[in-house]
Image 1 (cartoon, rainbow, N blue to C red):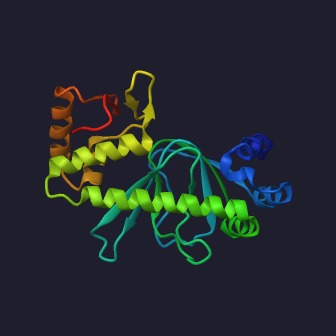
Image 2: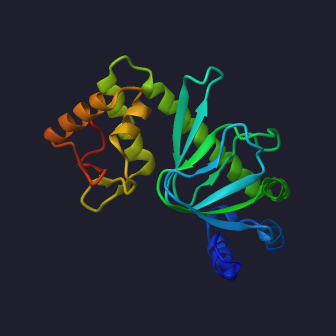
Length: 229
């Protein structure tokens, strides 16, 4: 856990972030009164699906993977949360438990607040409520798009679609037109998202590299065009 002597610096940073600009000073002080700032190592679990939904998280740096399992435990839906993004939004004002698990994909630094306080301040502030609704809409759109793009029989095509999703959601555009994903993505991770084997994912990646569409160095992907078609 970060020393509380450092908290004023984190509060000042947070106040400049779009998601927190709309709060009044009193609302912001109320929200951050029980704020925690922590670091997690790669592979550490923030919470499990079914745990009490008692904290709202906001990413400072790094990447978190979320996974929701169906009732059988055989099917999992994966999504990713990068810096300057908050979670969970699912279940606001309603659920008592987290709807998915969250794991650090890299070393991360993260702020959290009591969920009850977060819900209270967004309920009081119309601009904050609007921003949360917009964020939830974007999450729904991304998840629906991901599901639709993964419902294809060809494993190779699913790998290509998963790579494009990584590019769109996690990539950083460069001045030369390339898109670089600054987070390490293993072939095993790519295979999990694609619903296939590591071997199939590896073959698909090697083909895209040989076709000059991507590069894959030190587990980081670079995309040389907007699509892999």
